[in-house]
Image (cartoon, rainbow, N blue to C red):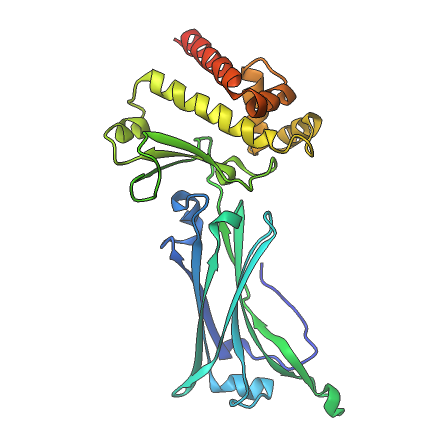
Length: 299
């Protein structure tokens, strides 16, 4: 949505500023980040802007004064914010600046918003010299800040195929990983992911659905333990009733997945979380029995 804002100082005309924000890593469009991004990976953005001579006329600022391009990335769910800035420098008849903003993967969840500001000494028009300049004034802001959804639409379990040797993981066929910071209200796609090892031939079979059913059963058991263990870590502050309320309100959140798993195991979510923390072997055994039962019933 276009931002309309009245400021108590002179601002530049729309045509005097040309700016853009783009993704460096992953190198894709904002709409497709959710398809290529893996939880825990950094997201790098590059912003650039140029000013025409009209900018200085419109704002009343001397071209020799310091004016800055500020790049901001904000992740509301995790309450994280990143900011970098660069001073505009003259190149012929235009002034240019560029910034690179790195959003740390460990603090990312659900969505990321990115914006560009131009900050400088705003001229207020006051006759009082003490009030004539608004220092560090936000002279300009992107009309449409960049919105980057990190959730993948659809019901498929979040899965990425990567080289385990290249990413420092153990040489195993798969790994179910949950972000340590993930909370019960986080979306499933932002909180947990199945990584499949491309170093092994079985990777292609797993991804394409051609692997042995026993292998998928083992993966499902790992998912059960990972989800319930994560939710169990919050059991002192987020009680079972709260988890059930979250699950009812949003079937795509981590709490909903945990409650569903607990039901499939014939347990209340409180007991399932307790077992995940205190008796993981007991929970694993129960999970294997349940997965085997549902597999046989479906067959």
